[in-house]
Amino acid sequence: MNTHVQQVVSDYFNGPLKLQSAFPFVAEALGTALIAVTGSYSIGTFNETSDLDLELILPDERYLALVDRAGGVQHLWVHDGDHRPLMDIKMRPLSWLQARLNGSDPEVLWIYRHAVAIQDREQVLPQLLHDAAKRFHLTLPDLIKQAYKDFRTGVTVEAAREPLGKSIMMNRTIESALALPFLVRNEPYPYPKWKRFWLNNSHEQGAEIVTLCEQWIAGNPVYRTLRNVMDSILTEAGYRDLTTHFWRKA
Image (tube, helix red, strand yellow):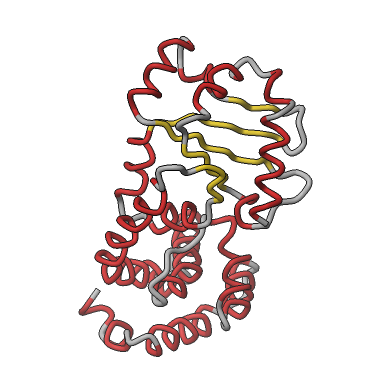
């Protein structure tokens, strides 16, 4: 997969990119940039309609100098809708990537763990990911407690009087149901549109969880079954106390 992605990027850089107005600035950045592909092309879920998302990460000083010469950050970006796949190239400062990974957001960590590094001469990304993983594990107990708290809002969904409130609580419950199996395995979880695919393919009970969530959205009263599945997963991972004393602990 990495070889295929690298070839697609190489072919674009050596041909169609030269017709883009941002080409001189991209070409100048290539010598020092961390170049990473994110999105569906980095995880192998792309199809004929997928965009190829490419990030060029530069030292802040070099990035600011390019922005100044280009006359604005918008002149450093490429959105080539005539190419297939559509090429979406963003140039960013290193501080931007550091800020994204400095938090404890599991989705951000997951995205960059699965990024394809086309070029990383200084091995910047592995170190950033190492530091981000350490922060993620420090906050993991709190993330699990909050996710389980959000999941248990499903208890009151049927009693909700307002359709909007009911929908909000159901969505929160489902989001947590799709995230908790990852968290209790000490893993970050994917961006929402990939949760279903990734859970189906990476967790022994993933297909069951996804099916129950889909049935609930369709109006079937399956929350109790879904809660039993989720509690069993947490109990097996050593979180029995959380599920047993939820209202007191969380």
